[in-house]
Amino acid sequence: MHIVPTEDQIRRSPKVLLHDHLDGGVRPSTVAELAEETGYDALPTTDVDGLDRWFAGATTAGSLEEYLERFVHTVGVMQTPGAISRVAAECAEDLAADGVVYAEVRYAPELSTQRGMGLDEVVESILDGFRQGAARAAAAGRRIRIGVLLCAMRQEPRAREIAELAVKYRDSGVVGFDIAGPEAGFPPTRSLDAFEYLRRENCHFTIHAGEGFGLPSIWEAIQWCGAARLGHGVRIVDDITVAEDGTARLGRLASFVRDRRIPLEMCPRSNVHTGTVPSVAEHPIALLRRLNFRVTVNTDNRLMSQTSMSREFGELVECFDYTLDDLQWFTVNAMKSAFLPFDQRLALINEVIKPGYAALRSESLFGTVASHAVALA
Ligand SMILES: O=c1[nH]cnc2c1ncn2[C@@H]1O[C@H](CO)[C@@H](O)[C@H]1O
Ligand SMILES: [Zn+2]
Image (tube, rainbow, N blue to C red; front, side, top):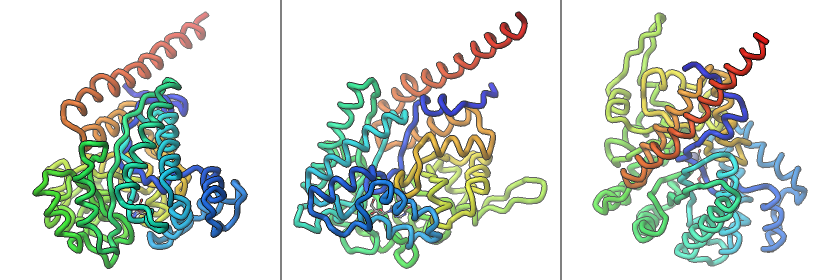
C-alpha cells in the first residue's frame, strides 16, 4: 500500500541501526560537562550551542580526512570509565527515544587510553553504560537492544590486538569488529592478519570500505578479508553502468555484492558531509535499492552529521517518495544483517518490526476512512 509516512510515524516506527559511532553521537551538553569534570581544557568553547555548531562544522568538511578531525574533542572527554559509561548510557537512551529497537554501536577502545585506561576497562565501561541506558529507556517505555562493535583504527598497528578483545568480550555484549579511520592509503589488507584471526574464531566483522576510497577497497574488504558487511560501500556504484532507458549493467564485483546479499551500511547524510556524494537527492541508495542490493540506512555520526535515524528516513522519504513499505524493507534488511543469532533476528523481525509497521499502516488506513467520513458528512 502506498502510504507516505508522516514525520511522527517515522519517529514511532521501529528502527534498526547497524552503523553508528559512539564518539560521533555524544550530546554537546555532555561534552561540556565531561570536559569540566575531567579537567579537559582543549575545547574550542565551553558554550553548549557553540560546541554544537563547532561539531556541525563537519557537515561542510568535504573530505573524510577533514570530517574525522571533529572527533578530537569527543574522544578528548572520553578518557575515564565514568565518562565512557555516561556517553554509552545516553547513546542508548537517545536511540531508544528515536524509536531504535536494535542497535550496534561502534567505538575504537584504543582512542580512550590517553590517560592510562586499559582496553578491557574501556570495553567494560561501554557495556556497563549500555546496560544502564537500556534499563532507563525500558523504564520510560522504550525498549532497545544494543550491542558493541569494536573498531581498530586503520592507520594504527593494533588491529590484531583489538580483534582479540572483540573475541574476549563476544559473550558479554560485543557483537563484532570493524576498522575505521582514513581509508585512502590504508587498505583493508593492511589488517589482514586480524581478519584471518577473526575468521578462525568464527567472529563477525564488517569493514568501512568504499567511502573515502573506491572499488579496490571494497574488493579487498570482501575477497581478501572476508567482510560480512560493508560500512558505507557506496562506491560500489562505480561498478554499475546505467543506460539512458534506466537499465543497469553490473560489473563482477557489484554482482557479487548483490548476489551474495552483502549488506551495505549506508549513511546518506554522512556521505554528503565527507564529499563522497553531492547530496542526499543524488545518493546512489535509490539506485541500489531499485536493483535490490541489501541496503540498510544508518546515521554514522549523529553529532557531526546532525542526524538521527528519523532524520535519515525523513530525508529519504522527501527525496525519493519512499513509503512505509520501503522503510520496513530497509529495517528488515538491517535486522537480517545484524550480528545476532539467527533465531533472535527472526524474533525481532516477526514480533517487533512487522507488528510495528502493521500498526502504523492500520493507523493510516483508519485515518483515511475517518477523513472520508468527515468529507461525506
Ligand atoms: O565515516 C567514517 N569513516 C571512517 N571512520 C570514521 C567514520 N566516522 C567515524 N570514524 C572514526 O571512527 C572512530 C571510532 O568511532 C572515530 O573516532 C572516527 O575517527
Ligand atoms: Zn562510520
